[in-house]
Length: 170
Picture 1: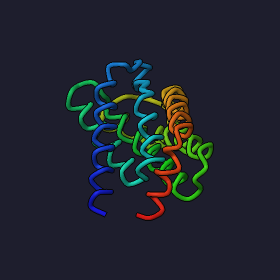
Picture 2 (picture 1 turned 90 degrees about the vertical axis):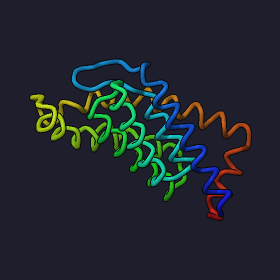
Picture 3 (picture 1 turned 120 degrees about the horizontal axis):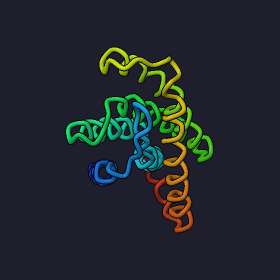
Picture 4 (picture 1 turned 180 degrees about the vertical axis):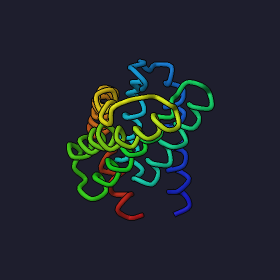
């Protein structure tokens, strides 16, 4: 059990580092930033680690990016809602297509709606309630595609079966 936790923390740390290091590869779009790498990390964490790690990683990555000046406060609700929903969907269905849709819906709709009060109250930006849906969707769709490609590559190696078997024992 201790070995499994150490492995999960190691993978989580690596994925957080990928999310932080790749943050310069974002595309500003309105008040939000299109950041597909975070959504790819959300997909990978959902499949390999589960929803708790995914949400924790999204929070830590967003916090580090904001502290470094490479992220926005809007990254918190978008990444965390997406990580939670895709993690829960994968945990209960183990269907990758539904997991990808969970990330897309969690970030684009739930995350965008959760970002509205942050943008208007905390950041002082005037916006319509659904103003962040399209930017969050654009950011997310790229990350979902990247995540799907990486998960497909892991599946081809046969490692995916090993990971899923380990998850069922823990």
